[in-house]
Length: 188
Image 1 (cartoon, rainbow, N blue to C red):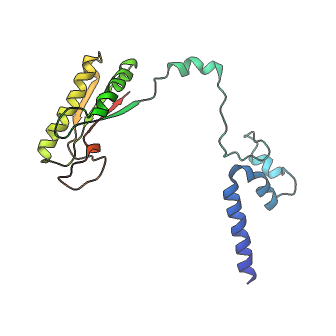
Image 2: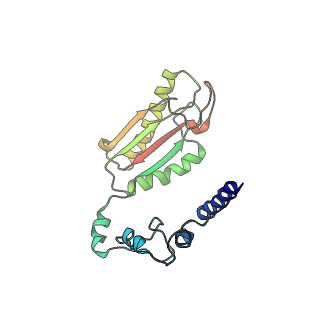
Image 3: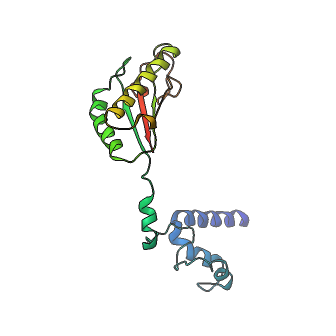
C-alpha cells in the first residue's frame, strides 16, 4: 500500500513538471536535489551555458542579431517558394480560383532571383494511367510556358508529369477529385 502511495505521488510530481514546462525547472530540480538554489554539481554541469534562474538550458531562447553577420545573412538566398495551382477536369486549363492565383504565383516567381524551378503535374484517378501521365505532362508544360512568357529562363525550368501516382487526396480508381488535378511549383 505504501509503495502504491509513493508511486501516485511521483506520478503527480512528474505530470506537474511536464505541464509546467520550462517555468518549473528550477524549483522541481531543487526540490528533489540540493537545498541551495545552485549546487556545486549543478554549476559544473551548466558552466558552459548561461542559464537564468528558473530556466532550463533546453528552453528556446531568442538569438540576438550579430551586426558582423548581417552581410552574410543578406547574401543568403531566399527561402524556397512553393505554390500549387489546380485544373479543370480533363484539361490543362486552370480552375477559376487558380486562374486568379496564377498571376500572384507567377509575379512572385518573377520577382525572385532563382536558380531552378521545378514544375510537377498531377491528375486524379479518372482515365487510364497512360492517359493521365500525358495529361499531367501537358499541365506541367502549361505552367512552364507561362513562366517562360514572364521572363523565366527556360533552361532553369524542369517539368515532370506524375499522372495519378502521387495523389494529394487518396481515392479509389476512377474518382474525380479536384485537389489531385494540380501542378506543384517549387522555386529555389
